[in-house]
Image 1 (cartoon, helix red, strand yellow):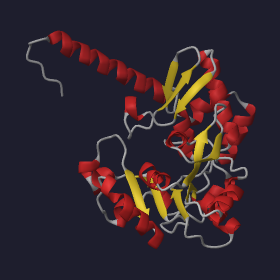
Image 2 (image 1 turned 135 degrees about the vertical axis):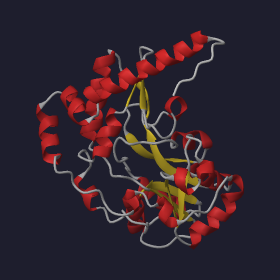
Image 3 (image 1 turned 135 degrees about the horizontal axis):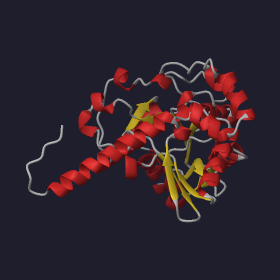
Length: 305
């Protein structure tokens, strides 16, 4: 959905502001008027809240110059931008993203160093949800390294969804509801298999909330390029649209462990590896053996239940 909206703005000579990953794997907001840089803004980024720098100042300069502007970010960033510019602009369009919360940068940096130590090489690229190899539903992260090797895991995902790594303010977020500051709110449509099963191709489906007249106006302009269906609001009410995630009871213990233990310990205790990972590995081996048996069976009548 972000691609369709930003295409509309760029085609009319406008500019787009969004989050990208730098070569150092920091999340930062940049400004662009071309598709190449816009494409860097696409994809999931679960690591840290992006650095805004002088983005708000730049947005206001573009608005005063009568440029059409699309700003995308978390709800708190959109609310911050609107507070900064101080008035309504007809040429500003805001897209906010439904989020669980943002983790501490310390966790992300420690995770990268841990993976680099294991692989004996620097990280070259990160895919936070490798849909190509594992599909949309499974949420597997893949890191590629300078030595040509790669590693896929769900460790950082497990830490993220455990909510112990989130910033304290996220436990009191005022935007964990269906009321959002953006003109359009977008998210992954978790629950699409029930709301509209014909859309569930395991490649990803956008949930789109049209929040006001400006949102309706731009949606009308882009909907012909989309395959879309209107669904009931309650069908898309995932947890971040209802209330903030509560502060986990083990949060203080997590941070004591993180500060005093090796990251390997943290990954095993909170990141889903260890016995849980071993059982998954065992199941994968069994599946591979079954596939091999089926292949070797050739024309034999074989059924596996």
